[in-house]
Structure formats: C-alpha cells, structure tokens
Length: 448
Image (cartoon, rainbow, N blue to C red; front, side):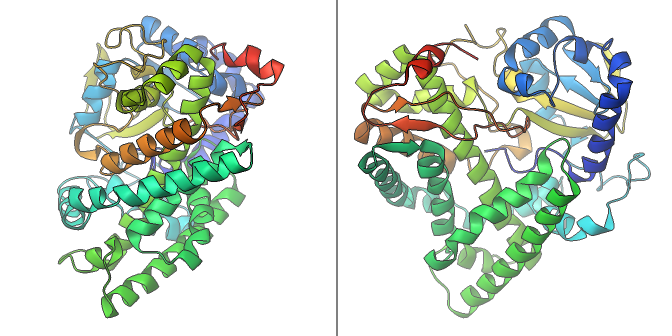
C-alpha cells in the first residue's frame, strides 16, 4: 500500500519546533484557524482515536484549510484529494526542480545523510522522468506472475499463523498474525534466508519511526542505524545472488539492465516498509472494526465469499495511512483558494474515504459495498506497486482466521499507537473461545 514514506523526513525538526511552540502558547492564536476549530489535532490521543468527526467538520466548513502548527494546507474532500494525487503540478519531492533554499526549506541535517541516501533511491521519492525510468525497470522483475506465484506461500503462512493462535487459545492478534505474515512474505519474495528474517521487522520499524510529526533525535539515530545496516545487508545479498542466482526478487533485480545497486537497495527497502506497515495496520484496524460491527462480522462468517469486497471496505473504513503529503511545484487553486509554489498540501486519505459525496453512508461498515473507489493505495503515478500482493495477503489472513477461529472474540478494548499518520493499534488481544470480557462486549459495539 501507499504507506512507505508519507512525511518528508527533513520536516522532522520543523514539526518538533512547531509542536513545542504550540504547547508554549502559539496554539491560542492558532485556535482561530479553521483546521484547529474543526478539531483536527494530530498530536492529541483523542483525535488519533476518533478522527472522523473532525474530518466531517473540515469537509463541510473548510475543505481547503491552512493548518499553522505544521505549515500545511489540509485537503479533506475526496474529489480534491484524488485530483491532487494525479496533478503533475505537485510532487512527492521538489528536488528535481529546485533546491531546498529555493523552496525556503532547511537543508538536510548531516546526521540524516545515510537515511536520505537510502530513501531517495526508492521510487516513491522520485518524480518523472526518473520515477518513470525506475518504476519501469522494477516492474520488469516485480511482475504480476511473480506475485501470483506467491499465493500458495501466502495462504500457507496465513493458515499456520491462524492455527498457532488457536492452539494457544488466543493472544495478541497483531503480534501473532498481523505482523509476521507480511514480513515473512516479503522475505520469501526477496529471498532473505530464514536465519536472517528476524532482522527485518526491527529495521522496518526504526526507519518508519521517522515518518511521524515529531520524531525525536533518538528516533532519527535509530532510523539512520537501520538504514546503514539494512543497506549493507542488501548489498551483500545482491552480491551473493549475482554469484549464485536464485528464483527470488533480489536475483531478478540484479539482472535488470540500467538499475543501479543503490536503486535496487532502495526498492527492496520500500517493498518491506510499505508492505509491512500497511498490511499490519489494515489487519489490526480491520478486526477492531469487525468486532465493533458484529452484524458485519456475522455476515462475513456466514459467507466467506464476501472477503474480497470486505477487505476493500475495511481499507476504506479505517485506512492505516491517514495523511499523504505533496509539494506544490507550480501555483495552484483548489476550490477558489490560491496555494503558491513552495507550499505543502496534506491530503487526508481518512477524510476522503469517508466523503458522503462519493460513498453512500460512509460511516457504515458495509462489507458488500460494490462501488468503493477508496484511495488507500493512492492514485496517479505513485499508485501502490504492491497493491495486488497486499490484497492477496489480507484476503488470506482474514480468511484463515475466519476458518480456523470461527469464535474469535475480543478480550479487551485496544489502545491506539500515538502516531497519527501511520495509524494503528498497539495490540489486539483476542480469544478463540468466543467468550468476551464484559467491558469489551460493551465497547466493541460502539464506534470510536
């Protein structure tokens, strides 16, 4: 999914300063601004847990809203978000047309150099013509046929994880099923030996820690270490595959003419980070949504044939990627609001996916929803290259749990992680006995 790098990391210092100014009193004046009046507050645990009322206020009152604390234009309506994802006057980066200084932005801190070297060699932070070249080259190796060949492996892993959860009578669904599945699948795809696979999840978590609104210096240092270690590992793996080719994606990428080694490494890291974080949080958020909507869960249990549409609906209903940022490369106007070159727009995927102008009864979880053009995979040239694999994993994961744990129930009300942009649960404790704790019974049937 489009979850790799939603927030440019060089904004980390700016976000940290802005948040401290907000806490120190700048927020008093900012509360007069539409974004704040709406209830949009990405640092608030309450908002992270309950963003959809604030989104409705933004869509109705100020669909293009300046948000002073982060210096961004919030875009909340579906049609605008969809259009700006495809508009070539915007980009994921501006460095192909301007310097940091020309855009009025700070230079990259020296200590983040390894991080940026890795990230800018992935296609998500490239724009045409370089993005076009890189995506075309990667597509020669990451083919639909290669993805489809993974289906038996994906289904076997999902079944094994579900059986293990049942054998233990339950546990943390996120740690036991949601997290291991996509990491294991990506490891199989890349050709990472089983003995090394325990390294992938910590590397991914540390790198993705940079993509929230106020990462600390400790988080930055952890991300840099992970970038260096992961890059070195993939460089060695690529060398091994050149010497002894195998039937895996790293081997295939080494054989793509014109793909630089740093681009190969950036591509592999992007596949892990984007695929891992997205699948984990769709699974956790999705089961939490089903527990809160028991009639939908009962219908899915009665008819597993609804799984493909149910997965699309779960991605729409509570998407893990709430915000996707783009830079304005030329002056634009959105709903009569002029947004100048050098600005940054924050495209609110969670709001767009709940826009009643596009989705009938958007706050209802409708696992039979047929017209469902959600934006959780993005749109335009940066539409998620791994979308078919993500869908395959999710259908397999939900299907395995429905088959092997027909009485799967919630044990305790989960808590949300503090991050807003990559939004997911800390844990989701379940039992396979079908017996709910009383508090969980009450709260599971109440929407957040």
